[in-house]
Image (tube, rainbow, N blue to C red):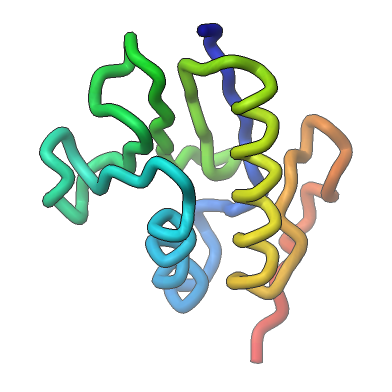
Length: 114
């Protein structure tokens, strides 16, 4: 297994109605464990696959630059997982979700207020 990471354009300053949808995306993803080390704390860090970061795992945190993922897994599985996350997030949130560093999206906020 290898350390993996990515930063998505789901920014901390997006409106509450956008952020309220993010846990729905988390739950749709393969390996969902829950929030916090026991999976029950909604204010905790989201985990997938394991709460032990030395095992196959993914964790997410909200950073000023966007939604940050750190993972311990093989590259091919990581690539599939994050591709699926971006696909689901784009559909649920209504704007293109991607990695700014990879040139997938612009830094500009991509959401549309209704």
